[in-house]
Amino acid sequence: MSNRKQEHGVVVGVDGSASSRKALEWALEYAAALDLTVTAVQAWQIPLAYGTGAMVLPGQELAEAARSVLDKTVDEVAAAWPQVHVERRIEEGHPAKVLLKAAEEAKMLVVGSRGHGGFVGALIGSVSQHCVTHAHCPVLVVRTR
Image 1: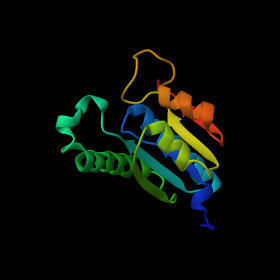
Image 2: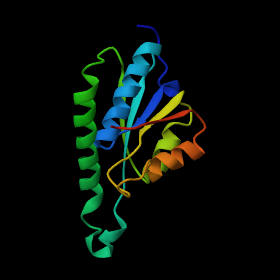
Image 3: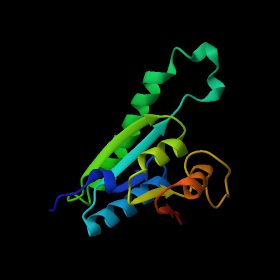
């Protein structure tokens, strides 16, 4: 293995969806071929529907749930690429903004075409669309069949 540079590797959005799993697989295969690192990023935010009455509950629990989903997904998918170093990050905020910030110095940003939200039947999700439109690096949108 050579000296990999994490700050210039591949950033991939992970939310546990089938689409994000495929994105992680693609990112790992690409990183293995080019001897790059992968940063798997899971964003979380308090849903607006919670209102002020439930604000005591969510923060820590949502962060822990996001960490659990990220760890489970990376553990399962990355096992096939043991030579690739995967950094794991969870951050509070809108997924598109979190991914764009994480990818500021990246060689590539990889996202799934559909996450857990949005409109059924849409070809590309709002997070993917925002990343494609605003990223300062190449963005690959991975579709599931």
